[in-house]
Image (tube, helix red, strand yellow):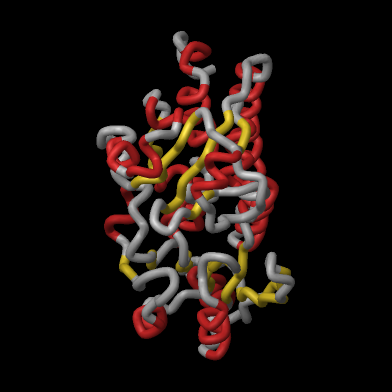
Length: 291
């Protein structure tokens, strides 16, 4: 009876709010420890589950497919066009979104509805680690976030050490073929290529449109194609395209399909992406397995 009385008294106490500064420079007030969270990109979902906060996730986007536990979560629409009515019915005490992959209108609408929305900006490898750290702080799991970052850094450092003395192939990462969009410098993919023992053939930053004349001017040794079906035959598509089939990398079969769900999500699995790329660039170095 005494314990019940104490519980009733505590339940009537006001929930203390904390203010956090997100990666867009916004001040976001969160009341208590978030227990109903909606991430608006698959990478943010993966971070939450990696931090052990998966039980607090009450809704995910239509694109979410990892980890398997997300299959039972309510879908809130696409990251670019989330269904605000569904989000409201889920009564979130925190929404996570990214400055680059979600629309600014979504931030404004959620603010109008008095739903705290915390913005992340996982640009480049440093930005990924900062995002994980920030998420850990706002969901009350800073130690788990620090541990995750240490583990990811350790895995990538082991790969970097293994390939550091090997020659670096020039790599062209194709995000989209027509029109041709590639991964340039100062992106997460650029960092992953470098750590895995390759050199980005693209000299410009971001994800620029690219001309075939630029491919010819800076011929790649390896061409990577982002695909959601990486098990299909490598390079078949490029060998059918007149402008591509004469390129050395295509002629010599140095075209590989890579899983976009691993490569394009700036979250915990980028360490796995580094290992995948290193095996493609330097298969001879991994006959004994990944360290």
